[in-house]
Image 1: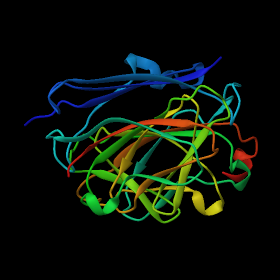
Image 2 (image 1 turned 30 degrees about the horizontal axis):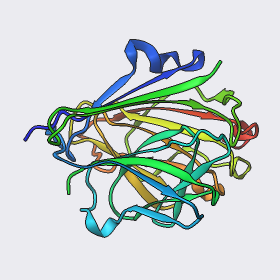
Image 3 (image 1 turned 90 degrees about the vertical axis):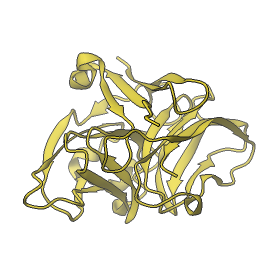
Length: 132
Length: 144
């Protein structure tokens, strides 16, 4: 199977015209060290929380280490103050606020988690392209 | 002027039905609708070391502020990758052509973003890397 999963990013701002030039950057999501496309996906999912407890989206034990997995995650809320803290293992990566998305490489050595910053209803959409 | 980032994820054959996700985020300061107003601009470095190097030095003043990091591996050899690390935790690997766009919480000075050309050797050639930071931390430059 040859996957054609791809990700494009366009970032528009005067200060980063190089990123916007040519319509952005496109990457073909390939397996580690090869030009063959990744063949597996955890499809687009949605989760809503009403507490500040950590949520494990992808457990490291279920995926091989040192692969070229990519995680897409987006906070769908519109209230500006809503956020989730994305973590890998016990390390905080960063906060995603309402409307923010991220495309994060993940090598499967630590659980991929997020922690809502509030107990108000917070909704996250996510998916992963992976090698198993 | 707002900073916006748009992602399009597409695949015609990774599942029974096509995948086509397109989302745009307006990068704002933490907890507000005010636009992020600072950036490092796009930088380019050549990695030629298999050990971790600090790409962006964390500044504790940036904790709980909004920041977004963009990194792309500009190598063309599919086998060449860079490993991205925060606080001794490997985040992931970027292979040739791969990019990432992630939030960054500078929880403390150990939270620097480090990169390594993990399988680099003198014969593989350098790994060109481009990166940019969009942020609101006014102290960033004094600590970078």
